[in-house]
Amino acid sequence: MNGNVSSPLHAAGSALPRPALDPELGRRLFGSLQRAEQRRKAEQYVRGLLEQPGRKTLRNIARQFDGNAAQQNVHHFISASPWDWMPVRHALARHVQHALVPEAWVVRPTVIPKVGPHSIGVDPQGPNLYGQQAVGVWMAASQYAVPVDWRLRLSGRWLEDPLRERANIPSDATSGTLEECVREAVAGVEGIEGVLGGPVVIDAEEIDGPALAGRLASRGTRFLVRVPADAPLRLNRAKLPRFGDRDRTAAELAASLPRLRRRVNPGDGPTTAAAIPVTHPEARRQGLLLVGEWRDGPADPSLWLTNADAPALSSLLRLTRLPAVVARDFTTISANVGVTDFAGRSFPGWHRHVTLASVAHHVVAMHTHSVVGSSEPDSPDYRPVI
Image (cartoon, rainbow, N blue to C red; front, side, top):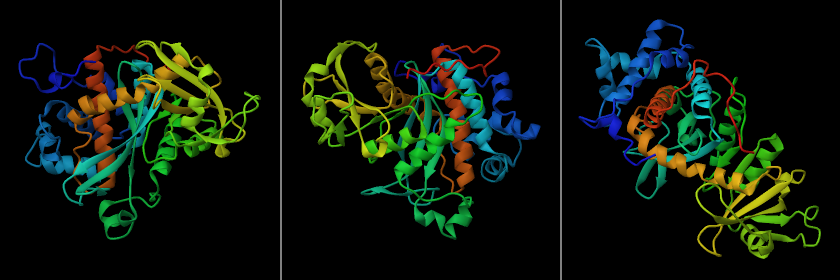
C-alpha cells in the first residue's frame, strides 16, 4: 500500500471516489442491533468517521445526524445506548476473514496520548505523557490489516468509585498487567463463531515473551512471539542430543549454532535465518522453536519463539513481517478514521467508538486495495500459515 492512504478520505478533487459503507455490508455488520433506528445510527456514525475531516469527535460526527439534538443523539447512541459491541466485532471478523484471507492474528499494544487525565483509561504513560493503553487484535496479511477486537487496560484507580461508576465500568472488568491484557485479547478471538483460528503473532515490549509463549502453548494456541536477546532458554536435547542443555540467552543460542543458518526468501528478498529447537520452564511439554533472522549482518538478530511444527522458515519469516503491516495501517488508516479520537469518560462509549472506527478502517482498506467480497462473506476462507 502506498503512503497516501488518507487521500481517498480527505483530498478535495481526488480522482478516486470517497470510501463509503456499502449498504449490504452495513446490514451484515449491524444485524445484531435490535432496532432499525440503532442500525441507521451505526451506519451514520461510520459515515461520519469516513467523511468528516479532522478529529472524529462526537460533535464532528454529529454532522451526519438530523435535527437540533444531533449531538445529544450521538452521545446517547455511543455512551448510553444499550447495544452490545461484541456481536458487531464478530460480524466484522467474519467479513474480514473472507475479504482479506488473512495469514494470522496480530496482537498490538499501543499507547494513545491524551491531554489530561480525564478520558476513560488515561494514566501517566511516561514523563509528561498521559494516555490510554489499548490492545488491538488484527487480522493481517501482507497486503493490509484490519482491527477486529480491542482491550482497554485499566489501572486500579479506574476501578474504584466514583470513577468506576461515572465511567460505567462493568463489574467483571479488572486491573491487570499488559501481558494479562494480551492473553485476554487472544482468548477473546479464539472462539468467534464462523472464524477459523490461526497463528497469533505478538511483537510487544514490556512483556515476558517466553512466559507468554509458554502460557499460550499450554492453551494449544499456535503462536509466534518476539523475545528479547536476554530471554533465558534451553536447547531441546531431544532434538539436538549432541549439545548441552544449560540455560542460555536467546541471543547466545542463536549465535552458538551457525550451522543451522540458511538463506531463505520469505517474499521480500533473501535473508539469513535459523530455527533452533528449545525448551522453556513454562512450556516443558511443548516443543518450541527459536527463530532467528539476520537481516542486517551477524549481530543483533530478530528473535521469535513459536510452537509451529517445523514449518518452512520462509513461512515463519513471512509472519514476522505482519506487525509492520499493522503498524503501518494503524498510522495511515486507523488514525484517519478516528480510532484514537474518543475523549469521553464512558467505558462502553470507548468500546462502541473503536468498534465503529474498526468498521470504517475495513471500508477504507477494501477501498484502497480494491477488494471485492463475494455474496457469501461468512465462508471459511482463512488460510493460516502455521
